[in-house]
Amino acid sequence: MTRFATSFLSAMIGLGSALGATTASDGADLIGVYVEEDSGVCAEPKVLSKITSRFGYQVQHVPNLPDVAITDFQRIRENRYLPALGEERPIGRRYCEATVILSDGNGREVWYLIEEGQGLASIGDNVEFCVAGFDRWNVYNSGCRILR
Image (cartoon, rainbow, N blue to C red; front, top):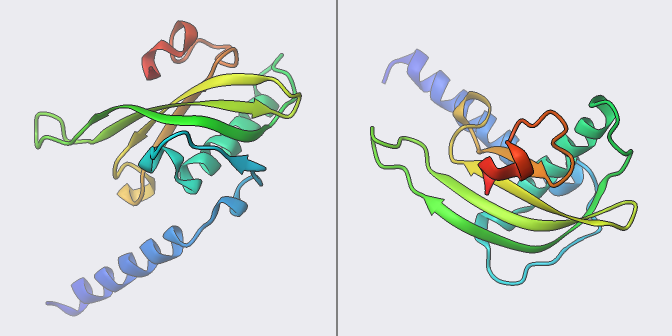
């Protein structure tokens, strides 16, 4: 292996370790997570932390949304899994659903999609989510239909 390739490989391993070492407390502090059944990746703290953090950003930057935060996740479940199938479907996707408890005490449904290997520089997973009643610009179609 060339010196450049060895250095590059070492840097990528180090970056992956540094990114993988984050915890749920790095984002917003969750009060609790209730899982009805083993929902695997859907209930991972780093996934729930991404949703909580991005939701906080959304309510601050989209006009006319109530100023609330996610405090809890309940009834987390995976609805479907589409594994990567080579060139036909190169990205594995997990579709998940949960109920979030907001800081005002109300519960809302949240649907989210976890795309395998689509994080920053293809390290980690990408998470797209939609909280019922908070898709003001209809990004995920009426009633978050695209992520269901």
